[in-house]
Image (cartoon, rainbow, N blue to C red; front, top):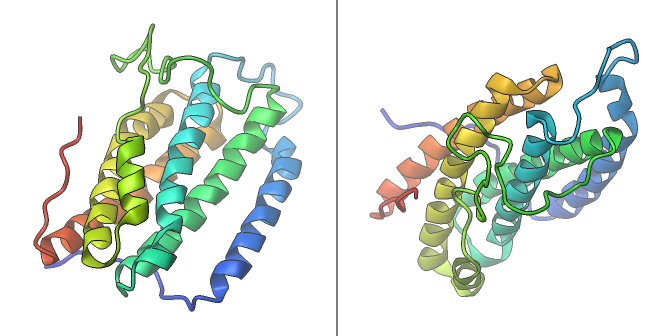
Length: 217
């Protein structure tokens, strides 16, 4: 039985509406995020916690996925890939808005400084961390994707996005298990559910196109 992805097909003009709506949603999320942490709680996450490290690193990770997904509208005509990319771009931009809202609330920097994943001390990435998060496409791969078209683009997009999703799984799982703030744990769990479904679907699309996934470092 094949995996069925339930993302809907949307006409091209809706990209303008979605982009505008997403920007507004980011502003609203940033303004309303104060409701997520009750003033009666004894403490909020401090810099260096799993909550802050996850929000910073996953914002960076998501931005690359949103960038790759944004290329599909101009570089691909595949009716299966277009709605998938639309859903990925919209969801990850919205999640970036939420995470950046939390970081603003916590008076934490919006982006990580130095090495990544230092907050994952129990996953083998603690202490010194890593320079590049798992699953991230290299600048050369992004440039190749920007200049590809047709079937070549479709396969490369699926390969890079699948590996990107797979690379983010350990980060989301660790945050789901160890974050202090319930909303952060819930968001990490939502990422795991959605990206597992999307990953299964991308594996199916690659197989249908006679291509293999890229190895995950």
